[in-house]
Amino acid sequence: MLASNIRKIAGIQYMQDLSRTHGWPYLISWSHRISGVLLAIYVCFHIITLSTLQDPAVFTSKMLMFGSLFPTFFEWLLGIPVIYHCLNGGRLLLYELFANRRDQLVLGWVFVLSLSYIVLLGFFMAIGNQSVSAILFWVYLFVVSLFITFITIKKTRQSHASLAWKLQRISGAFLFVMIPAHMLYMHLDPSTGRDAQVIITRMSSSFIKLVDFLLVCSVLYHGAYGIFGISRDYLSSRRLQIISTFSIAILATLFAWIGVNLIFSVG
Image 1 (cartoon, rainbow, N blue to C red):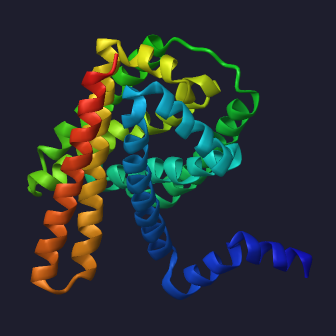
Image 2 (cartoon, helix red, strand yellow; image 1 turned 30 degrees about the vertical axis):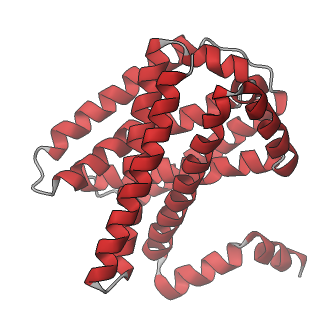
């Protein structure tokens, strides 16, 4: 009885029921979409919060408020949709562009690596005393991301899909490493993401500005296109589809402008 109650609370029973009625592909697909929407919302929220860096006192007060509303445990929970969406996105790239058909094996690795990342993230968040060079950290990961992106670009050139579809896959390839790395980096030490002066000093680097610029543009395009795809699937009216497309484009452009303006005005 106790084991049954734990399974219900954790949502395991519900997921198993869904897998039986709709199949695992349905569950995995919707988990990817839901995690993507959650991350798109979080990115917009994150950009708005960081925009207050131009007034460090306001930023500090917001960090104190968010720290009381969302303890470290909830920040750690955010790592679950982050790593799942990135790794499952990598699985989709392997399937769509690299003709990988050992999908069950790759899916197994998605869950194993996701669990490993969550444990590692929790460990670093718990000790919270790691210090690394921002330049060295991001140079290595930036090079890796560019390499993955370059290979993906070569593969998309062989596809006859639309440019928008190709850019979605290319942006996903760039974010595949960058987003999990960003979350890990921001939690190595609490001051990294909460101390206004530390953030401003880091953002004064031209290289970091380039990294942040590509991150903002890639993540907003990737998120906007993903939400656009979901809306196209469930809005039958042509008029509603047009309204939805313009609304998504306007919001993505607005947040991109806020983010890019912040990057080049701070530091």
